[in-house]
Amino acid sequence: MPAMRAFVGCGGGACTTGGAAGSRSGLLGKSSKDDWKIDETQPNGLMRQHGNYWVWHDYIRRSEDLKGKESITLTSHATYMDLGLLPTILERWQAPISLAIYACGSDFDKTVQSLAYLKYCLMQGDLMRRFLSIHLVMDNQHVPENLDRFGAGLLRVPSDKCEKQEPFERMRQDQTFWNKLKLSYPVNLLRNVARFNAQTYYIMALDLQLVPPPNFVRKFLKFAWRNYLQSSDTYTFQKSIYCLPTFAHKPHAPLAQSKSQLIQIQREYNITTPIYNHVALQKEWLTVQNSKDDLRIFSRSSKMNMCVGYVSINELEPLYDERCDMESIYDTGANLKAKVLVGLNYTFVTLDGSFLIRRSRDSWKSVDVVKTQRKTSLRLFLTWYKFYNNFLS
Image 1 (cartoon, helix red, strand yellow):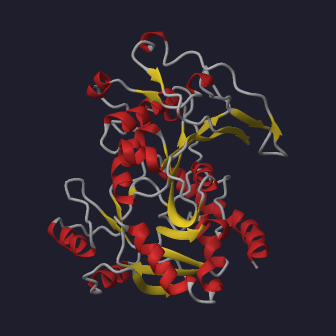
Image 2 (cartoon, helix red, strand yellow):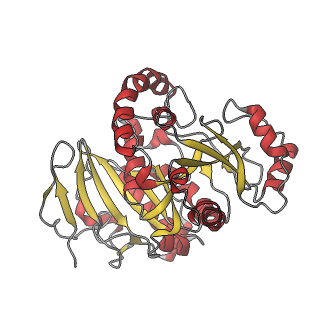
Image 3 (cartoon, helix red, strand yellow):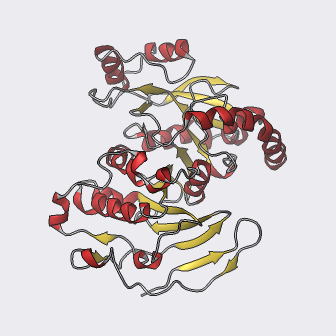
């Protein structure tokens, strides 16, 4: 059996190569040894130390080998309690997904069980095998015991196991290991890990609570080729962020497939809660006729406006500051990344013909921490601006 590669000493200095991980003996423990089987077809990935965390890159690797400008990678982060949101995203996206999961202590076992349930018990299992790559992040003070027992990949679930309750059914973060021990949720590290492992030119960085539009990847690639890639004006394209308007949702309402359905659902279910402060601009977007849902430019701006989720060029977009725990993408006062993009004179292009739906609030976010981040982000902004201004100029 191939050994898992391990890199240690990354974070404060250069990386040095470590030895192979130990044996792959053991499963979920003695009580479940007869019920679970190792799937040895999965790659072992790469383990790397990152400051106070261990990162297991490519714990699971997607089978579809899409790179460069062939597709768009959706990058996101989660705990095992968020994984119930994945099936809908897999169905609507159907393109590469790079997902970083926070899996400390006993959350690691629950994460493995949840991924196994998704892969072998749900109808989206084939989409998961084709498109989903998983990366695990663990606090170095709470590394799971016998970590190498899962080194061969996902555990295979027998058919009778699928009748039992999925580990993530409750979707309550207060039941997780990290929440009970009041550990920080390193959201920006998770976001960067997901981006680091994307192999496509374009990415869309989203929180799992945001539902992407169906058929978007094909439409955007066609849009990019038609508007930019055939022209000589590559600078404008590279310094642009392509934003999708985001709309609120109610649990009993269906998920819209098109703009006309979105308008109808908003009206029928009286969904009026704005995601951001630009209510007038959002209403204007809804009034623009687009019966074929063609992807086209609605507006250009030097401000983020309706830009919670967006497509960017991965190599040219600034990373997230990992010193900021729980940085909100919705609160402009606490969003350091937004300040950096605006300071670097990026153009924010709002698209018509596609949209995002925020079906729930961020389960991991602490309001108190976000308020503190508003002060912290002001202090960190200048450092990031100076670096990326020199890097991208």
